[in-house]
Length: 159
Image (cartoon, rainbow, N blue to C red; front, side):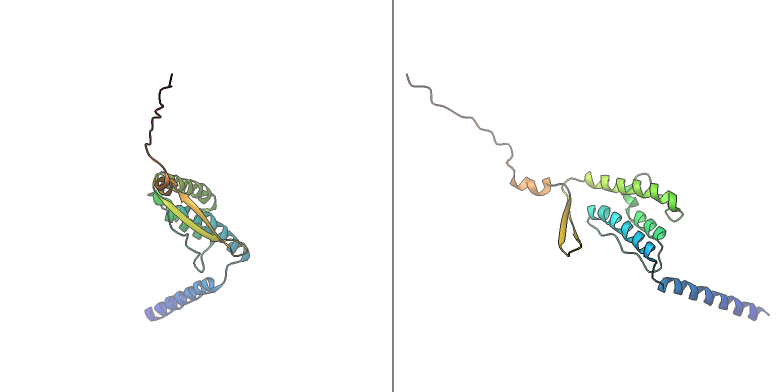
């Protein structure tokens, strides 16, 4: 009798795994793909400020799970959400947390002087666009004059 229960349990587990595999192999709907791409672009702008790229969605990932993962990667820069778990956030809560974490990450970047990071993207026609984030003084300082003072001496007028 105990063997049939184990077999039934094993069959149920196999069916659950097959259903999970079908879900992973199924491409996301157009609306989900669009939502995840919009979330990736928004996150990538903040990731670029720290010299990184936002990771792409994983097969079978929903837009909500993907957004949680993006926030989780940047929460280290947020004093308020640094130690908070993100796995339980719903669609309404992720909006507020995401905005705050992205703002904190952007502010953390602007507070680091001497760092300039290039972020390259491509537009619709394939051109590469480079945007620079950070402190422009880290390269401009090489071309500026420091502490130059002068005194103009004129000859006294001849009488």
